[in-house]
Image (cartoon, rainbow, N blue to C red; front, side, top):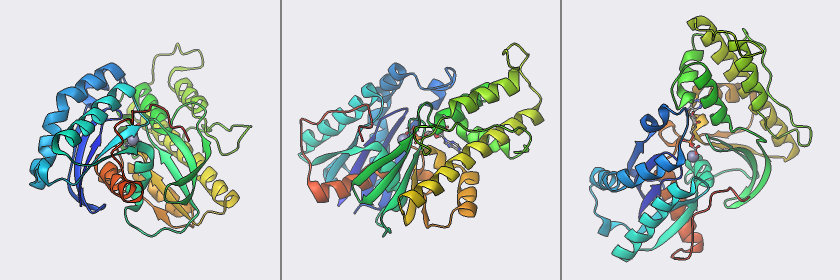
Length: 333
Ligand code: KG4
Ligand code: ZN
């Protein structure tokens, strides 16, 4: 079964063609990073306009690379939510439109569920598993009882982890998206140079808070009153990047180990853009004894292949073709 996956929830216009739920024939991601870089983050209105500009040409590229035509596609899967509502509308309507024009079935897919699914595509998993989503829009833990059966354990009370990376990168004078740049800069820095700490949330010790950590970075760079000239020397910047990254990941892993214990999880599945970070992968391997499931690097950030793969499984289990489905902005779990 050949599935066309469409992803437009944020600032990537992405199409992929995936065979039988796991064989990726093409996976094209048209990034809008250049458009949003000057604003230090995604501007929703600009994102949806750019999706409209890119959507047809990206679809054509995905078809070309897999040497297929729309007529040969068996199912259309698109991101239904969560995400930017205007951006989602572009992909949802494209998906429904292709389905109507070609008389093919279609299915809507949850974006964050697809991030986790990217790590396990057709692999056997020991349940219950701890699901960890760490992206630009989300940071939360889920208890995964079985495929499709989730219980939200905890989430961030302010910034998502990727968002904190992007904002700290901005303070360091790096361009959006900041995650990969912080990872690179941190390689030259000393993670013990600054003693930052991550936020603890009284109500739920497994919740996250990164706003205090961000402020601590700002103070380190500009002084407590924010009036100092920003520190510009490269070594100090690298030390700040390394210290920030190390404390953010230590906090995540400490809470993951606690969640595993409290919820008796047998494995850990990770998804979202921040999973591309190699230090994170190394630290998890060193500090956690459970089997870990990571998406391969190309599937860490937003892409159409994870949407097609999850769409294939959803369609097999529940069918599709509900023309009344609409995009949704919020997670809703
Ligand atoms: O999953 P994703 O592509 O989009 C959302 O669904 O939000 O995640 C994007 C986020 C950005 O905040 C980006 O800075 C972060 O993932 N990211 C990273 C790395 N690569 C991307 N964060 C840390 N280290 C990385 N190597
Ligand atoms: Zn995402």
